[in-house]
Structures are given as structure tokens and as C-alpha cells.
Image (cartoon, rainbow, N blue to C red; front, side):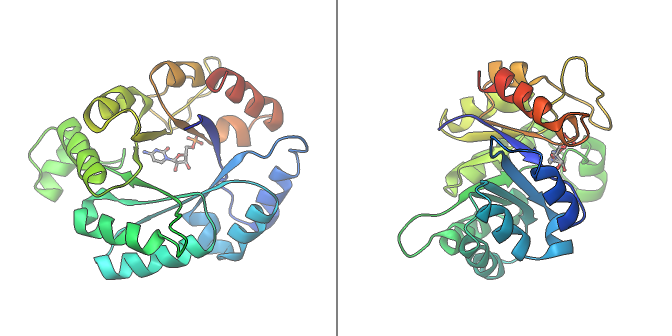
Length: 232
Ligand code: C5P
């Protein structure tokens, strides 16, 4: 599985995302479409970006009863996305149903990645609000292991957790890692950050990079710098 840089296109309109993608005349970056853009523009935005030749990670983080997730995944698979995701907290049964829904008639399907615990969830919130008493990293590893048991392809995690996830779930189990910043860049609201080079060293399979590219003065140069550091 080749390593790649996924650009988080956190824009709120088609105009803004297309203006951004128009800057890339030579390469076709792997694009992450999140809830904001998808809910603003609908499924057609996925088709349009795909038609321009980009791979797409559709980041909608599904979580519902197995039957509903299965049916929704079947619709997303029909949009021809390359990667999508769900919450591992929806249970192994929900994750298995998601794979069934995603699998096309010819047996192919997009990659399916699980969110374990959101990085906005602290151990204290987990204990007090969700009544989960275990340490956060144990919960993250257990959810990753559930995802692997359900047949998923990987998890979203910090580059700092990649090695542990690979140790527990196997080297082929993908780690898709946000929280990436250039050594000389602004960290913004991210807390635990690593550089693209460090993420590569730690074994990340894909890095998800937003503002260091989208808010750069020269986004194409920033993208190329990420690729040079991460893919090599
Ligand atoms: O702009 P920045 O590089 O921080 O963007 C990171 C992207 O990864 C955003 O789309 C953000 O929602 C997403 N993400 C994250 N941390 C997670 C899961 C997803 O930053 N744990």
C-alpha cells in the first residue's frame, strides 16, 4: 500500500474548494471531503472532484444501527469514493454491516477506516460522561482491534500511535493520521503534532493535512513539501 498525503479540503462551498484545486495544474492530490463541504454541496461535490481525477476520502464518520449504516455505505460506495469512515463505537456488528454495504457487485469496495475515540474526548470526559473507566490509550487500542476483527482496513489516529496500532493489528492495518505540521509552521488548534518526515518515520500510511496546505501562501509548494518529506 503506497503512502500518500491527503489534503483536508475543509471549505464551506464548491466555489472555494474548486478555486483551491484549480491551483494544482500538475498533480492531483488525494482530497478529504468532510461534513461541512458534503452537507453544504451534497453528493454532487464528490462526483465533480472525482471527475477531475482526484482520489477521495469521504470523512462522514457514520454511526447508527447496522442496517442504516449498511444502506448509507452502499450509497457512498456508489459515489465511487476511495476511502470512507465510521465510528468504531458503533460496535463490531455495525462495522461488519458497513463493509457489506460498501462492497460492490464486482467485489471491490472503498477502504473503510474507523475513528476510535475523537481527539476532543479526554479521559475525564470518557469517565464522567460515557462511564468508561479504562485509560484512553487502552480504549483506543481496543477499538482499533475491534475494527480489525470486523474486517476494516485501518483507523484514524495520531502518528504517535501508528506503531502501537501496527503492533496490535498488523503492519497492513492502515493508520491515517492528522495532526501534521511543518517544523517551522503554525500548530493552530492541534496539540500533539508531528512533521510529515516524523510521521513517515513512525509508520503512518496516510497523513491528513489541512491548513498547512490550504492556508499556505503557496499551497502547491506546501503540498510538494509534504509529499517530499512523507513519501520521499
Ligand atoms: O488543518 P488541519 O491540518 O489541522 O486539518 C486536519 C484535518 O483532520 C481536519 O479535517 C480535522 O477535522 C481532521 N481530524 C483531526 N483530528 C482527528 C480526526 C480528524 O484533525 N482526530
